[in-house]
Every structure is written in structure tokens, then in C-alpha cells.
Image (cartoon, rainbow, N blue to C red; front, side, top):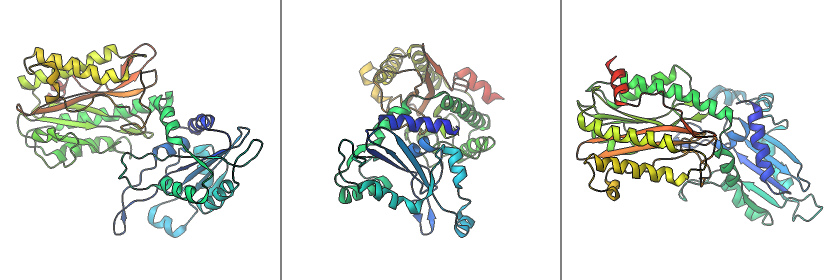
Length: 421
């Protein structure tokens, strides 16, 4: 992405903000793992979407005055020779400007003083330059999540500047991120290619007796040949009975002859992610029962890609996956009646993909061009010992949709052909 992408994202956000308001966004901070070790840093996705800057402890501060005019500045870490010896080179002001398009680049030590000067003006009234609103991204997945910089700032705002109305920047950003721009779609396409290389590597290396961590090593090695970014999210790779843990990360199991290998994986390119699942037999040959269940999933997936188009109900993507697959399982004699499909289908079948693998977007009522989401068909038959999912990435086009991961082998015949090589 070049700076024009991030500039455009900020302009759309600013346009949705109220006059006499400020926006504060944070890149995030290091989170301690143990003693002097920290978890790998991951820049806040909304901050990156707005700035293109990838570093801890950065901040974006924008002011929209009463007339609607906007000024913006970004705060970065200062040069520190000793710190940079230990943790790497820091972004320079000219680099921050080139990446983000923000011309006013300051060091983080000045952030508090600048913020106070803006917030301390008091109440806003017509014709005044005082600030009345502050936009923060206060999103949490769970109330138990740790406080991030925005939550800490919220408490200070409420205590020190109670006359400021707190507004939800996250609600605006969810809408903006819902429709992918051409450069984002191009990045996802590149990530699909790399994801395919990783899945092919696992298929070609597969054999009975192989451990899950060895499958993961094949996937990771294939991705590392294309970029240093690695997987877009922790890979789910399992064999046999471990396939019945939907989010499985142990990689300690061993594949035995006749086991299915479940993989739910994705590469990233330019920070855009993919999410693809392929189930395959570790010995390279589908048994009759494996083939029966896999073809039910494949027919369901193909059906969805035939009918998804602009205006189609987003909720019906999940609903149709369950109904259509349930009927196929009934017709095959696997399921007694459609309403009992929950016995074999344990999770939903559609989530959006983008800067997050489960993209933090506003869930739409109907699908529209530029949306990218998964079509995910999972079947888990514990009595037969067969669990897998077939998951592809769907791009909604002007008159239908496109399977972005269609080139990754997905039929019984294609998978077996790859594994025989």
C-alpha cells in the first residue's frame, strides 16, 4: 500500500466525524510475556489501516475544527542509540511522512502536552474553537480483555475533561473496512498464492506417521520462501481425533494411516490476510466415507459460490450452508433429518477477511461488491473419526462472486493427483 491508500482512509474517517472534535488512535504497546521477554508486537490494525506505520507506542492525533477543517499529526519514538542496539532501528520522521502522508511528525514525548492543550479549552459553542468531542477506538472482544492505551486514556478524559463527549471511532472504521479497495484485493490475491504454496507443500509431504508439527514446518517453510511475514494467524493443523478441536494449536499429534489432515491456514501480503481450509487424507487416498463427506462439503461450497451476489442476505450465507449441506447429508443417509445438522456442523460458515483474519467490520445485512468473506463448510463425524473443513475466500463482484482460493486443490480428484506426485 502506498501513502495515498492510508490518506484516503483517514479522509473518509474525518468526513464521518463531528465538527469540533479530535481523534486519538494508538499503535499499541509491548505486552510482557515473562521476565524480560515480551510477546511479539502486532500493530493495532485500525492504526495501521489509517497510517501504514508499524511500530509500538505511536499515536495519531487529528483535529476537526468547527468549520470542518482537519489538521493531523503523528507521534513516533525518538532516536535512541542504546535502545536501537537491542530492539532494532526506529522509523525516522521522513520515513513516517513517506509511509503515512502525514507531514506533521512529532516525538511521543510531546503527545501529552499537545493533547492537554486541545482538551483543556472547555465547552464548545457555535463560533468557538473549543473541542467538544473526542473519538477513541475502545473496542474489546471481551470485557475481560486487558486495558489498551485507548481505555487508559478514556479514564483520564472522564476524570480531567468530563465536558468532552466520547465518540466511537471503531464504529466508523468498521464501516470503512467492510468494502475492500482494489489495492487490498490485489494484496489478498498475492496472499492466496502463497497460502496455496503452503498447502501444496503439506499435501506433497504427507505420509502416515508424520507429526502435526512436521506438517506445520512444511507450511511455514513454504511461506518463508516468499516473504518474512509468515502466517497471517496461528495455523490450525491437526490429524485424526485432534480434528474435533475446532481451534487446535498443539501440533503434537501423529497422523495414522486413514486419518484426515485438517488445516485452517493463511498467509499475509502487505498486511492483508487469507483464511483457507483443506482437508486431505494423510495417505493420499480418500476412503469411501471420507469421499462421501468431502463431496457433500464441496457441493455445498460450489452451490454458495453459484448463488452469492450483491443483495444476497449476509445471514443467509451461514443459513444456506447449513441447510444445503444438511440436505446432502440426509440424501446420503448420513443424517436422519435436516434439523439435526448440528450433530455434524459445529460452527458458522462465513466471516469477513482483511486486516484481521476475522476482520473487524460492521456485519452487513446484504453482501455488496468489494466484500471479502469466507465460505466455510465444516463436517465433524466423530463416529467415523472424520473431521475437516473446506474453506475458501469469496470476493463479491458487481454481478456475482469469485472464489479467490479456487486454484488451491479442492476436489477429491485434484487433491489425490497432487498427493501422488
